[in-house]
Length: 324
Ligand SMILES: Cc1cc2nc3c(=O)[nH]c(=O)nc-3n(C[C@H](O)[C@H](O)[C@H](O)COP(=O)(O)OP(=O)(O)OC[C@H]3O[C@@H](n4cnc5c(N)ncnc54)[C@H](O)[C@@H]3O)c2cc1C
Image (cartoon, rainbow, N blue to C red; front, side):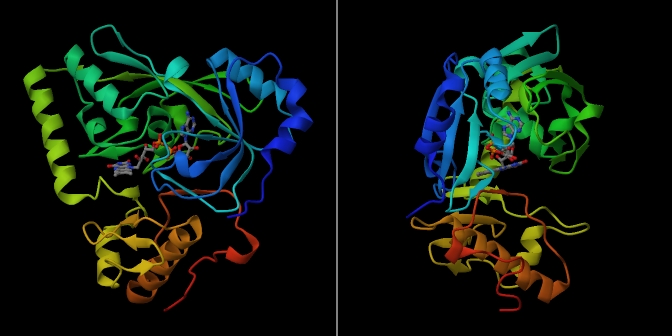
């Protein structure tokens, strides 16, 4: 499948600017290797910095007119088949994956740390309040941006402060209030790349924390298709209802377009049954929005972040297949 980006050309144009960097630059990085959906076109150039200093140097080196996008573990991303123009930054565990205890009830974590590791570190330290991370398959950067939450707890309830670099490579320390949290959303400036965060829990008993984590895992395995290629909840819950109920009522459970399907197990989870591309996944999502609008008058809003370019023959329109 042809993409619309050319990472080799971009690097040969700008390559000299990156001479001093210690991280890895990869042209035409297949995003199907990164996203949980295992679908989508390439990132024109992916940069994996060695550490925060290296990331700052990279941000300063890229001319302003080139877009830079940050991705995490890819568990909430749908990448379009034309690819992502410009640069995609991905932080790796080496450099951004440390978790350390601070005082009695705080943890500092690099943003490439998987949420699950933060839950385990909290268990080891006897700090309660992080069991919900045991069930979320993303990383801390994504959790901070998405205000990830489960089991009645959200990231915003644990954040003390966040370190971030802006598009110019300048360092910012954001307080909890600066993060501008709402349901599955942070209002912090969209160019910020979070590099680490300080969290606060409460003193807890290890046996109780372990039991809460086990309950989270058991619940997940019974109600969510966690072993499928998926992006988690496709749509945010609308005011006063649940997205899955509205999708079910509109006949969306199990609906298929090509290799994309609304999970028969949890119908707000979209799955790649094996051959889906970004176009099929997004078309299915817009078809579902269209059906729900017709059935109940509710406009569902995407929770999954959609990135990149449509191929010219594949443009997906809002509410595609209106009233199919
Ligand atoms: C099976 C399954 C179950 C899920 N269950 C839940 C759940 O219960 N609750 C829930 O909230 N979510 C859930 N999700 C969705 C997803 O795991 C979360 O949104 C997670 O926080 C995304 O983290 P990520 O590292 O995968 O981010 P990505 O998907 O890679 O990116 C998501 C967003 O975060 C931004 N981002 C990532 N890293 C950084 C950074 N360092 N700095 C700034 N921005 C950054 C990206 O630009 C993008 O906008 C589930 C997903 C799956 C596949």
